Amino acid sequence: MAISPHDNLALMTVTRFAPSPSGAIHLGNARTALFNWLLARRDGGQFLLRIEDTDAERSSEAYAQQIETDLEWLGLGWDGQIVRQSARSAVYADAFETLERAGRVYPCYCTPLEINISRKSQLAAGKPPRYAGTCRHLTAEQRATREAEGREPTLRFRVPDDGRVEFLDLVHGEQAFQCADIGDFIIRRADGTASFFFSNIVDDALMGVTTVLRGEDHLSNTPRQLLIAMALDLKAPDYGHISLITAMDGSPLSKRAGAKSVAELGADGYLPIALVNQLYRLGHSSDLTGLQDLPTLAQHFNPAHLVRSPARWDPVQLAVWQKDAVHALSADEALAWMRPQLPQGLDESTARAFVAAVQANVVVPQDVADWAAVIFGEGMIQAESGPPATPTLSPDFAAAAITALRTHGADWSALTQAVKAATGAKGPALFKPLRLALTGRDHGPELGPILALMGVERAIARLEASTGP
Image (cartoon, rainbow, N blue to C red; front, side):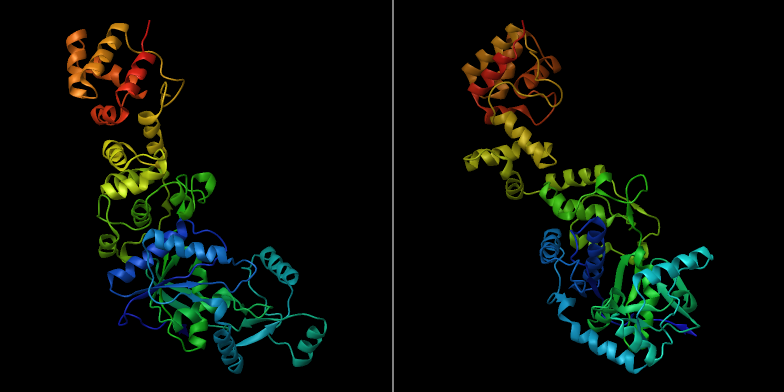
């Protein structure tokens, strides 16, 4: 006997993102949401959001709200109303009753300790750990005895003794699992709530989901869910199990490896389109180059291009995408992004001039703050690394520059021509000392706009502080 899911090829594409609100959205979650969103938008279908909060102890309303915030920040809007599994207990109860009437389930009174001992025994015997079927054939009297002991039963699905479950995975190809290796599994917890295996497939089917892209750690769950769908005569979605994201050295992704949640990256000033572009290329091959918007990414997304090898997260590459994203901002967008780092009370025209001057030289908000300090700060400028900049100008060079500033104001061209005429310096010998004296850096934005923003008095003070013996 071979058990396969229904064919969904003729249906409108409906995908979903179904997180558990037990923590912040991490990079793997975000990529899963992105891939499902891209597939739905490519096909003109629907992208649904479902909050899987049947486990009350681990679920948090704050995390549920953060999920919505993070998706909106990423630009991944969903269709229709958000579905919360905690409000669907009646739906699951009906499904449980259907399976009970069909004899496809049974109450299990085994304690976690008993199950753990059984699994250790199986492993010691060289057998794969699976439920041993201890409660599968209990009589009504034996069940009553266990209930009299105060045991609250779970509900287990009765897996067929023989046959196999077959399905075509969109990433891993043909899959086949022997029923004898699966073991009866819990579909209702002792507290009466539905397990992940159960509520996930029931809701996918009833919500009309046609395609599920999810992490490959769920691959072993799929045969169980297909068995449930067949027992309830539900249409199962097509599944594609995508490779996991790892650190650059192949180890599990973690904060120690430089990974942050979506909310943390947003708080750090990263732009959503930068993160989206990197996630798009993690485990998905594409001929697209350069920063692309979401509609373009959707147009070129193809599940056939999802790869099986682990996807390595590179924080350095994220900085590259961030740089491209910042440089692509309009003047208004760049001002909105930079404004929190600008001095309070800065007038609009000066703020816009600042944006125009530094946009090509900043990547993250700290860069903006650094240049704001360079341009609007007082006193000696801290070098980018090491101790404060040491004096770099000869007295004659500094005097020539100060005289030019007092004569020509913040006219950069007139300043440099006057210093050149007075000292004979030209090229790097002219520009590098001025840049170091004015900004404490040997590279950066064009100095003309910087000088105009800095003002004559502040520039003179910098020159005087940088004069050598």
